[in-house]
Image (cartoon, rainbow, N blue to C red; front, side, top):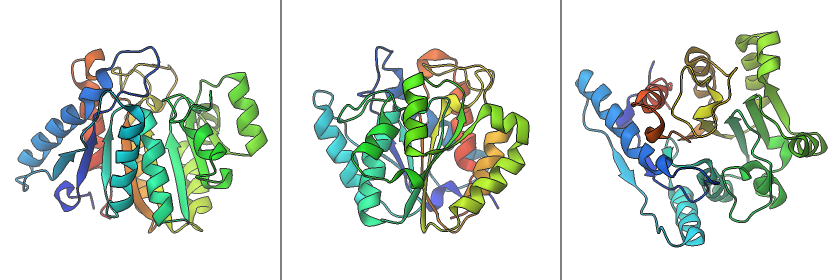
Length: 266
């Protein structure tokens, strides 16, 4: 059964603080995705969207990060967070991990985001900082859809033994087998946080991103993966990040909205 979007709060985080030398268009994404969600709900004759945005202090990155972490600590199970750039995943996971120590993180991304060790992290550093600040041990992190990895990132992933399902592996094994393996590995965790960097999709399906990488997932494959993960009892929180409405004519925000409505009921 598909999720009734009105049964949980959807929280917008219009932050582009973590962007590195790119446009700040991702800050427009939460409102754009929410607008598509409202349209979908109107077609279903559903009640209005339960949507709120976190205020962003555009002059203070650290303060914004702290505010996001506070919201995460008090967010109810089932909350959906709409970014914004991928750096918002850091305070969200950090806040939730303080309340739910037995948490696993599954990230769909074309990139492993292990470039630097900035604090707060940028969109390129989220996974590395979560590990190096010991917010999560590497055994609780699973990366899916990788296909653009710097040599230093590959070394870090290998050294930390972070489990990765690259696009090459997905092509060789098939999405169903990959999801069979991933879901089995997640059974021991009580809380599951899923982060979707929309550039995990092939640009043919999601052109509105700052870092397009050919050879990615199809929208159907990602919907299937999300359907499998949201069927797990531990599935608790999700974010969708890196949609940039300035890069297309609304196609990618529409895909993001369809992903949200494709989640199984919490």
